[in-house]
Amino acid sequence: MAVMVKGVYTRGVIRPEHSDELEKYKAKLEEGEEVAITFRKWASSKSERAFRYFHAICRRYADYSGYSMEHAKHELCIQFGIAVEYVPEFDPPEWKTGTFVEYHRTLYFRKSTTVYTSAEMAALIDQSLNACNDAGIPIDDLIRENGDYYDRKRAV
Image (tube, rainbow, N blue to C red):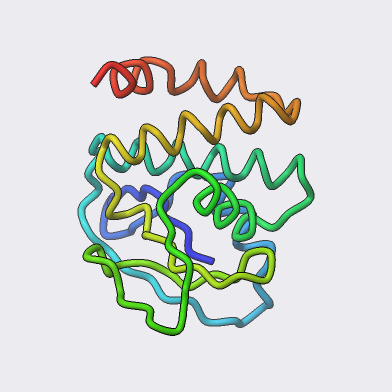
């Protein structure tokens, strides 16, 4: 599991901002366990905002379905995103960046959401929200928090 959080550099110290996702990650660690840390300047780009929005939907879907976050993300991506079934004569798609995932006893190569186009990500978000709504999972707060961004993307 990977977590991305924003941090602030002040007087020689980098402090991560509070994040529920970070707290959940820390709760799974054993005392003394080592983790990898990568630093780069924070860029609040539209793609990062869409990425965070989709992951919030995945977390909500996981919480209400009883799935792990990883399983929920794979399920939504395979059902509504871009994935190709693995067959013996498999030839990697032109997007090449992805993950092999077993889903309902079938192996898929799932395109990484980090390389989705804006249109692909908007469609994935839209269909994932519909799936949550159909399952009775409350999502109004997610839509309210991300509505202006989401409405602009749907109009494109």
